[in-house]
Length: 249
Image (cartoon, rainbow, N blue to C red):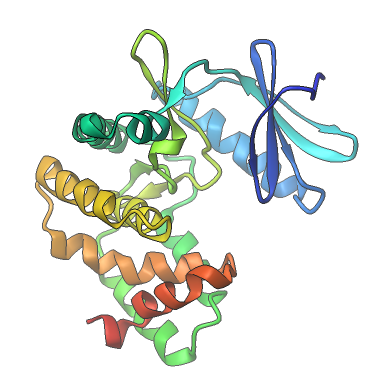
């Protein structure tokens, strides 16, 4: 494998291009279970027919787990938005339409979003009263089985030269409630300091899906609690404010 052409770097991985392949090389702390689970998620979603890269193999390179997949040539929707802000509205229109298209798919072999959130709440570090309130809220929300990305942001959408959209990075994929997926996207915009874009996105999502904003808001505390597990100090104050159900309501 040729690891001389890096194309992206994240806190827990580096991404390289080798010809027609993309190599996602995990850090040493990544377990076999995490790498294989992400590869399994990608394979499950690929089988639905939704536009994602094809998986080639999972292996170890220099003692680190690597996921090798089809390389998708193009630009991220995030780069298009940032480079041409005057046309950002049309980009957000396309992003929301693509997300709603994704939610129309079913992937019954994926883990259910509700189970994942219960585990995240238990590991959030929040006090017992808040954890109880969050679990109670989660239990009362509808349990759908729509395909959910879990990190549906413009940076994970690639627009190819012929105008097709391909969605990457399926490590957080689940089946569940579409409004939870939207709440997660909204939160990611807010944590990135893109408050105006967060508002634009959520307004469009609610309009196009005919979903009440209040219904998406009910998921925000749960999604914020799940994000606390990552332990990012810079995010903690905002997440704690959202995750505390009593204060939030």
